[in-house]
Length: 246
Ligand code: ADP
Ligand code: MG
Image 1 (cartoon, helix red, strand yellow):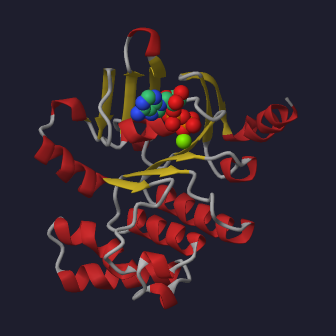
Image 2 (cartoon, rainbow, N blue to C red):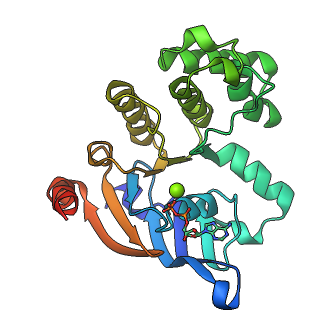
């Protein structure tokens, strides 16, 4: 068996459940989802609005706490970590692309990308160089010294992606990372995510677009907080066109 088939998954979700509110107002955002993502794998998550896609991602990234079940990142059950350990794990192991980018308004593009690295102990000089290199790969050299409100939505989105991809983090989570991008830029971003996974990261990406999901090894479909279908790359195209025809 190849080594990667026996290595523990980078991300493992076990019976992951998230409930909001109580009684008559109770909302089951996620109902006992199991999912494993190994190094080298890119998984696309699709499903209607409100099906639990963002909930799955925020729980997987340790940004929200499960009502029940477990999130295991690189063999560590994140529910057993204290706040400080969890922040350290998130900075070191998780690259997160937020749906609304979450760039810090008071920092330039380069500073936004460098900050998590500096917090993790990388020298300012090295972190700034990494940031500029990442911007360059995104063909965004010209925005390095601009603040978020001086950039277009598409530029901010790519800065957010560059921030998630610096530092070789093992787990990359992206919530609709192509929402504000034209199709050519979207393909460039997907190629970069794919390359990151081919280089050993595990990736989970929420998308509505079959053409972006086609870059994934596996597509997981959510409905009402449950996984209703899963398909592997060879069958993804036919299943996606069937979904589209519904
Ligand atoms: P998606 O990303 O697939 O559109 P979400 O994960 O954002 O779906 O939401 C799943 C369900 O959980 C939805 O019904 C949503 O209204 C509900 N939900 C999400 N966050 C909260 C919250 N903070 N309070 C109450 N309900 C929430
Ligand atoms: Mg969402």
